[in-house]
Image 1 (cartoon, rainbow, N blue to C red):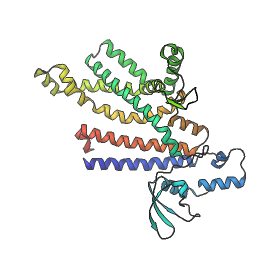
Image 2 (image 1 turned 180 degrees about the vertical axis):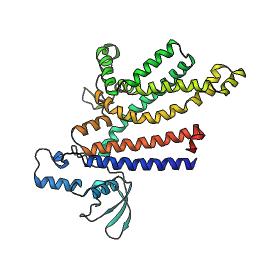
Image 3 (image 1 turned 45 degrees about the vertical axis):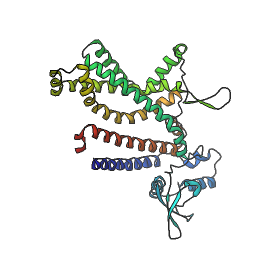
Image 4 (image 1 turned 30 degrees about the vertical axis):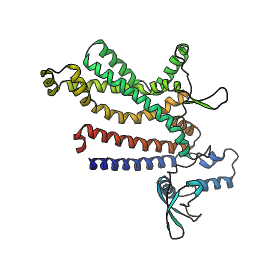
Length: 358
């Protein structure tokens, strides 16, 4: 099992190296002058050059990539020479010095440095640490909603195969998978928060924390989670339902299920003790794949409902050409998804020992 886990960790590291390289190269060749974007319309040549030097935009591409990697590493090598591209700034990194090499080189332990926002001048990691818990809560509630309801519907569809309940659920599932996230968000907001607002009491727009009308700060408003969570969970719900239905039907056709029936075990006992556990393998695999899709869908869902998470940060960053925010957000999400996929692979390895061979 340890070899299996180490192999998955190695794959995850290779994936992250590829993601980091692609993101850096992609945003390095995009048109637009970041120095002008940072300063606005009141820029001059000298000021632009100073900003480019501060952001490292005056360096060759390979040195920019080297500093980019060095900044993201939790343990990195720096110099005390201000003219060196790897110059260590306490204000910038806020790191702990581990070793000193000679008079000018330092080995430090620090949080990954993802740059500063061109617009707000705040560290990107600080902005992400504030926004991501809101997106994570939205994604977790959505996936829990999809898993629980999808497993229940899938089991009942398999038990009542080819009945009106089965056919209706399958039709709704197909529609759910075909419905784009942004369109579903607009549709749900219009129906449940506009047309039926008197009955539902839901808001078309609103984040997890809402500013009080009485001026006493922000308060937690869980009601604003309902529509975004349901909207984001529709597509994985449809997938889980169909996968669970097909998996249960396949398990029910196995020889050991017929043996259990021949021994006189009740149908409910067979479902609970034998069928559900063995039918969950494809569902667990699908969940890991859908987490990436949910993060992508969260961008549109959050923007439509004005739910201020990472999705809104990415859209605002793209609109304002705030590249460090967009790059940092993509890397932040990528790291989390790689970790989640590794954990899912390990869980799948426990559920199905054959998976350890691959």
